[in-house]
Amino acid sequence: MSNLKLKNDEVKNAIKPKKIKELVSQNAIYVVLVVLIVAIAVVNPRFISFATFKDILLQNSTRAIIALGMSFILITGGVDLSAGRVVGLAAVLSASMLQKADYSRRFFPDMPNLPLWLPIVIAVAAGLASGLLNGFIISKFNVPPFIATLGTMVIVYGANSIYFDLPPNDSQPIGGLRSDFTNLGSGSILSIPIIILIAIIVTLIVWVIHNKTRLGKNMFAIGGNAEAAKVSGINVGRTLLILYGIAGALFALGGVLEAARTGGATNNYGNMYELDAIAACVVGGVSNLGGIGTVPGVITGVLIFGVINYGLTYININPYWQLIIKGLIIVAAVGFDIRKYLARK
Image (cartoon, rainbow, N blue to C red; front, side, top):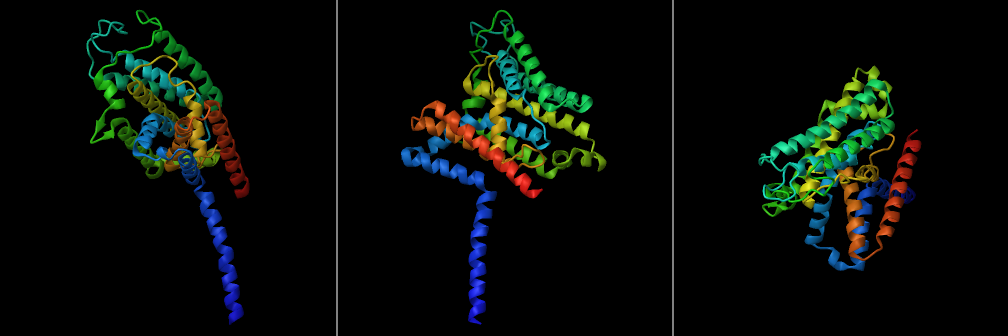
């Protein structure tokens, strides 16, 4: 009897480390986020404060929206390199139509004050159109997403630069934005910043689409195996068209809010944002091979890079080290993802 008890104890002791290892493996990104916060707090304890976390959320609300848009594309096994330029286009479009009437360098000197929602809708519609163009090229002509969105990236940037260079603006930074517009980026409701509230609402909507809709199920099916998805009756072309359209609209919304948050815009807004979004998604557990990803993971990925950017600056670490650390995290995350894929096979 005593021997049996000893064996049971040995089995239990063997199972516990295995369970702990699995738990850590499944929640690695959350562990990384906590470790980063603790490490920075050890160097400077003042980092742990409500004001600090509020600043991190404020600075990364737009990036979260952009990363959520990118998650739709990555889960299908694609990529969208035009995201950053769509951000810039939306920022310029909305800012150019929402300047103060008495501002000396108005983009449209004779334009009457438009209702706040109209320029925002126009900017988001432009992002939607860009996304639909990507989806159409990819689904209709079977152009690889990397090439299709690379071409769109150049087209969008060129079109935005031509618009930005129109007289009397002549490529000058757009400023003098109306207070009702900048309030979206700096105002609060019940002490909660509006931009954070918008990011939370977008996050909840995206979670519902991912987990509770047929579109979400089809998205994961396409990412898992596009050919099998076709055989099972999924209209892959139409689904990709819709997903790229949604992503484009979210990129544009991020651009509008970025202009509101910073109080201005240029045609270079959003430059390289697509890489930050891809990095946040990959670090957050979205498989670069498609078919896998969660909304909480994406948001955690955004926060990890937000903590790195803000935290390392907070403790006076050279900004170039930030790039090295971000790069190492991205490589490690992709390597971990590929290892899990090979282990499943």
